[in-house]
Image 1 (cartoon, rainbow, N blue to C red):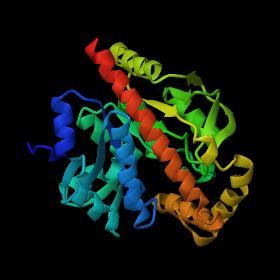
Image 2 (spheres, one colour):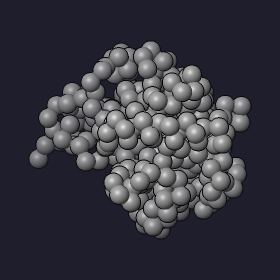
Image 3 (tube, helix red, strand yellow):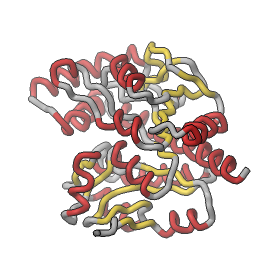
Image 4 (cartoon, one colour):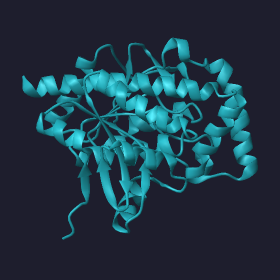
Length: 307
């Protein structure tokens, strides 16, 4: 039987030996979410935000058939500069590893990688979900099913606002995924702090979130939980302002016949251009905010384990 080619970065390996808090980070935000060299700058900032909050960052990617959990400086830069990295989810992650490929991990794939490495917390920008018009296209992100299967706490600014947020929440409820708004009652909408939708759960501390994760584990309940952490107020683009831009982007994607994995990068690029880069600045602010909260939750989980 072939052993899984799992490679822990030096910082992650030491953190596991020390039983320190670790936060997983995805890599599609680097390869498919931001332009060079801003993607590399942001990846470094996010990793540093995790460190500054008292945890160790573990950026996950598949590189030449090996699942890397934690990238050194050279590997991170090479990935950021790469133009043809695959975008990996549950369906194609194993095939990429088995055939010696290189790819960046989506939310679903990062959750799988984190769980394989024994990491309980993952910070990202926002999760995928039910795309608008999914009643005809059946376009629903694998992220939702992964949250129902894999025991990782995912911290994001809700689901991406380009999605059908009411349907996304309905699917998460059907799948039994806890959706926890942090510090507010409303479900955030990525660039906007409020979506107009009530979150199923609210918690105001990292300790409570960690306790909920540990209780699910003790009960033997499958899956993880989504922590919806609103973008900092000073960085948000209110929903009333961003909604018309999103509608224009969706119309452009439909006219261009864009589908599948290409939809989200296309929409994000269109919105970036329409907002003259403001959406990217907001994206960076919310990712950094999520990294800090992810580190707090990871530290709280370690404290529970030691008690």
